[in-house]
Amino acid sequence: ADIVHRQHVETHLREREAELERFAAVAAHDLKSPLTVIMGYCELVEDTLAPGSDSQVTGWLGRVRTGTRRMQHLIDDLLAYAAAGDGSLEPAEIDLDTLVADIVMERTSHLDHDRPNIEFGRLPKVVADPARIRQVLDNLIGNAVKYVRHGTVAQVDISAEREGDMWRIAVADHGIGISADQRENVFAAFARARGSEGYPGTGLGLAICRRIVNHHGGEIRVEENPGGGSRFVFTLPVAPEPSSRGAEA
Ligand code: ADP
Image 1 (spheres, protein in one colour):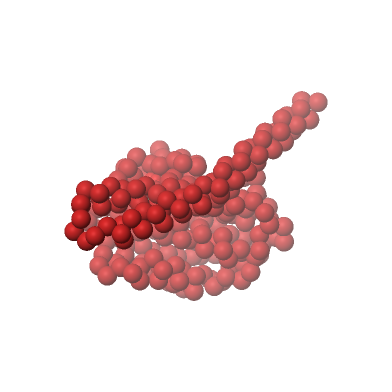
Image 2: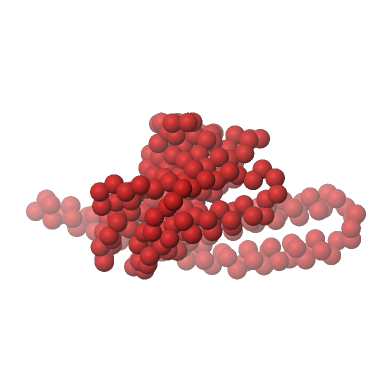
């Protein structure tokens, strides 16, 4: 009877959690359009100001814009978080080489200096949901490029190896690193490690990654990169089961 009661409570809690999350997702979604309006008018006012006019006003507008953009990022992350562990996966064959090359290009092509040095050897083909795996790698690569010591250029190494029936995919950097006592915590929603104060972020990226990877039946963790910095490792089943497992983890 105890077990039945516990299961009942757990189901109830899970339902409540899902309900809260739906609430947050709807709220986040509804905040998108007013923000777009704020952004639009901000740009309009900026364009209307005569060149050389009150630089203080331009400064204020810049702040409105920065704040609005931060809010937009947060909303996008909230929506991605809500979507990450939810719904069915649409697995397809993904050529990780092509995917990573594409992400690197997207993240670096507009930079003309301080271009990060991102290396990857031969990466395998995996079967997984392409849009979600892209999100995982994009978050990890984005972090690897972001959390560099100020004034240094990012050095990132992406690799994969097969271990039994799992692929182990690693994104390693030589950045600021994460102290041992915080390595598990960074995967919680809104968690940010000590030392990341000077870097922009919402603390949701790794929570999104963990949800997506777990939803695929894999795991994600971070360790110290032997050369200094962090090394994020996630696993994906070589032959995924038709219905995803591990969605609760
Ligand atoms: P965000 O980057 O938006 O803060 P994430 O969920 O992606 O959120 O990461 C959570 C925290 O983990 C970050 O705030 C940072 O403290 C730490 N972190 C993530 N990736 C790295 C990395 N490559 N190097 C050092 N710290 C990292």
